[in-house]
Amino acid sequence: MATDSWALAVDEQEAAAESLSNLHLKEEKIKPDANGAVKTNAHTEKTDEEEKEDRAAQSLLNKLIRSNLVDNTNQVEVLQRDPSSPLYSVKSFEELRLKPQLLQGVYAMGFNRPSKIQENALPLMLAEPPQNLIAQSQSGTGKTAAFVLAMLSQVEPANKYPQCLCLSPTYELALQTGKVIEQMGKFYPELKLAYAVRGNKLDRGQKVSEQIVIGTPGTVLDWCSKLKFIDPKKIKVFVLDEADVMIATQGHQDQSIRIQRMLPRNCQMLLFSATFEDSVWKFAQKVVPDPNIIKLKREEETLDTIKQYYVVCNNREEKFQALCNLYGAITIAQAMIFCHTRKTASWLAAELSKEGHQVALLSGEMMVEQRAAVIERFREGKEKVLVTTNVCARGIDVEQVSVVINFDLPVDKDGNPDNETYLHRIGRTGRFGKRGLAVNMVDSKHSMNILNRIQEHFNKKIERLDTDDLDEIEKIAN
Ligand SMILES: Nc1ncnc2c1ncn2[C@@H]1O[C@H](COP(=O)(O)OP(=O)(O)OP(=O)(O)O)[C@@H](O)[C@H]1O
Image 1 (tube, rainbow, N blue to C red):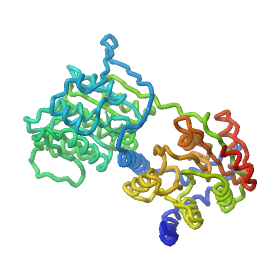
Image 2 (tube, rainbow, N blue to C red):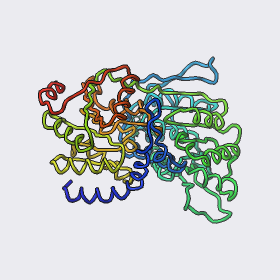
Image 3 (cartoon, helix red, strand yellow):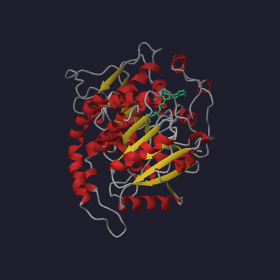
Image 4 (tube, rainbow, N blue to C red):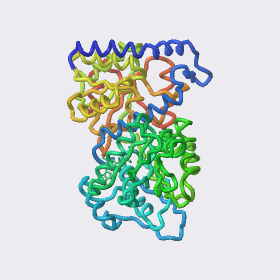
C-alpha cells in the first residue's frame, strides 16, 4: 500500500482509536499494586453486546478465511451416555450408510473422509434411536459439516414443515451455516431452507413450509411461540451452534432454553462449541439432556522450538528503531507484530510502510470481510509484515510466519501478564519443527515486570538482545 493511503488509513483509525486512547491515558495514572499488577479495567471492560460481537466476528472471520480443515493430531475424548454400547468410529463416509443424495453432496464438497471429530460424532448422531450430543472442538475441525449431515439425514423432504431447527448467534453466522446446508443438500431438490432472522417477515397466520430452519434465538422464539409460524412439536433435530458465542449474551441463553423447552422429548438435541469454559458447560447441560460428550483435546502448544528475546527501549520510537535494526540485520520471511492498541498498530504500520516494507494492518474497526481479505493477502505473501492488535488476531493460523514481535506485551484486562495469549502469539512461529524467533519489546519497569512474570510462568529464560549490535542479531538468526 502506498504511503498516502496509509496516512489516510491512519487518520481514520486514530479517530476511531481516540476514545480508547483517552481511557488508556487514564489508566496510566493508576499505580501498580504490591504484585506489580495494574488495574486497567477502564478500557477493556466490555458490555455483553460488545463481547458477543467480538466473539461472533472472530468466529465469522475464521469461517471466511478457511477453505479446509485445520490440521491437528489431537486426541478425541468420548464420554458415552451408555458406556456399555461399543465405541464406534468411522473412517469413511460410506460406513455411515448415508442416503445416496447425501453421500453425493459430501463428495461434491470435496470431502474424502471424515475429520477427527466427525469420525466419532457422526455414528452417535446417526444412531437409531438418535443420540443427544455435546461436542467441543476448536474452530475449523468439521463441526458444522457434522451437524449439517445429521440434520440432512433426518429430514423428510416430502414433508413440507420444519423438522430441523438450528440456532446461530448472529445473522451472518446463520448465513454461513445455511450455505453449508445448501451445498451439502444440493442433490435434494425438494429440500428448502428458511432463515429465521430479524427482518425476515412472514404474514400473520402463515406457516413455514421449509424443512430446515436456521436462525437467531430471538426470532426463532417468536416464530415458535408468539407468531406460531413453526410448530416446535414437529422438530426432530435441534442444533445449538457456537454455544460459547451464544452465551456471551444473556438474552440468547434464556431464549435458547425457552425454545428447547417447547420441543418434543424425543427430539434429538445437539450442541457445539469451540471452547468449553464452565459457563458453556452449565448451559450445555441445561439444553441437552442425557448427552454423549465428545471433546477434541487442544494441541499442546509449546515454546521449546522458539527462540525468545527481549529488547529494552524507552519509548515507541526506540521500539521502532529496534525493529528496523532487526530487519536490517536478518532476513525475515514474514512477521506478525502485535500492538496493544489500534492507535499504536496504525502508527507502526505507517512507519514501517514509510521504510519501504510491504505492510498489512489488521484493525478492530474493519469489517470482518475486510479483515478476511487482509489475512488472505498476507497468507499469499503479498505483504510480508502483518501489524495487528490482539483482538483481531486471536485464533488466526498463518503458518509461514518466521518472526513474532510483541511490540507490546500481552496483558489481560486487569493488567496482569496474559500468558495464554503470549503462548498463542509466539506459537505461530516455529511450527512443524521449524525454529521460530520471538522478540519482545520492553519499555518500562512495568513491562519488564510483566516479562519477568511470563518467564516465571513458563519457567523459561528470555534472553536480552541488543539490537544496536549487528553481530549479536546475526547470531540469533542462525
Ligand atoms: N471431512 C472433511 N473433509 C474435508 N474438508 C472438510 C471436512 N469436514 C469439513 N471440512 C471443511 O473444513 C472446513 C472447516 O469445517 P467446519 O466449518 O465444519 O468446521 P467447524 O469446526 O464447524 O468450524 P467453526 O467452529 O469455525 O464453525 C470447512 O471449509 C469445511 O468445508
